[in-house]
Length: 156
Image (cartoon, rainbow, N blue to C red; front, side):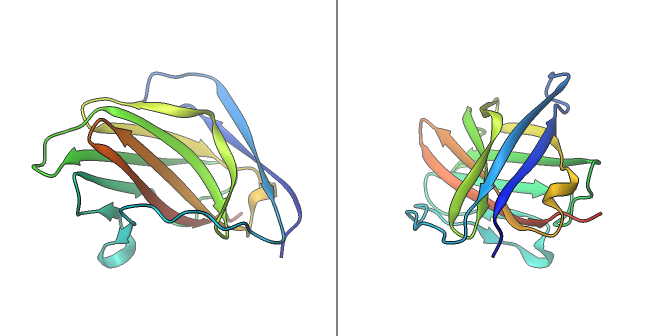
């Protein structure tokens, strides 16, 4: 059980942004229930990606690893296509989940997915060390929405 607030600093990555932004992750002892995504994430062999491979929207989330280091850039990318493999544009909401409850969002929380791609970097502070979090990308397109999960545990 964890109590308190974890602050996550998020540095702009290769997406044309600059400077830094931050978000807070508020943790709670009793997670609330949430609705399961229509197309759940399926990890691939070796845990190198999280993906949705069925339905009208297909997506892949790739993180640098599952153990980002405190105060160091950690890169991730989201790829989204239709069932035929054609890139889709839309938006992606970046969330942080503890248990099954969303406890934080990127600032700003929503980013553009252009021609099927989004890439950015995050920087985690010392307060996040050791907490079992899920980095979550919720992708919205004209063909539908999917949720991609990436478990992380920040280390020193």
